[in-house]
Image 1 (spheres, rainbow, N blue to C red):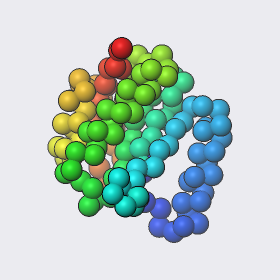
Image 2 (spheres, helix red, strand yellow):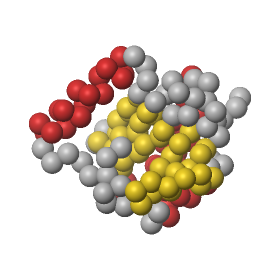
Image 3 (spheres, rainbow, N blue to C red):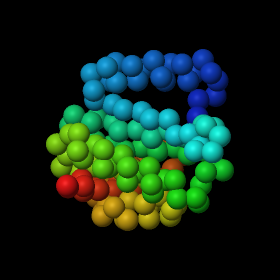
Amino acid sequence: MAWDPPETEAAFADVWRSWLKTIEDGSEFHFVVRSRNDDRFLGVIGVHAALTGTPELGIWLRSEAHGLGFGRELIGTIIGWASESFPIRYFEYPVAEENIASRRIAEAYGGEVRGHRTNPKYRSLVYHIPPMRA
C-alpha cells in the first residue's frame, strides 16, 4: 500500500489497472472498507503475493477512521480469511516505525519484528504474523 494516495484520479486509474492482472490470477486481493452507518469510503486493505506462502498485508485508512479499532478488526479478518484460503507460513506486515498503533495491531496477532525497510517517507519494521489455524 502506498503511503500517500495518488494525486489525481487519472494517477489512481494507473494503480487500479495494474491490480487487474494480479486479481485475475488470484495473487492479489484488494478490499474496500466502508462505514457500516452510511456506506462512506474509509479505506482499503490488501493481501499481496497471496500465492507465495508469505503474503504481505497492507492497509490504508482515512485519518478520521484512526483510533476506532477498525485497523485491528480488519487485519484480524483478513488474516483469518487468507489463512483459510491459502497455505500460509506467515504474513509480512510492514509498519512505519513511528506508527505505534499499527505496531500494536501486528503484536496483537502474534507478530514479531523480523526485518526493516527504508521507504522514501519513512523507515518500517517488517513483522511476521503467524496464520490463524482452525
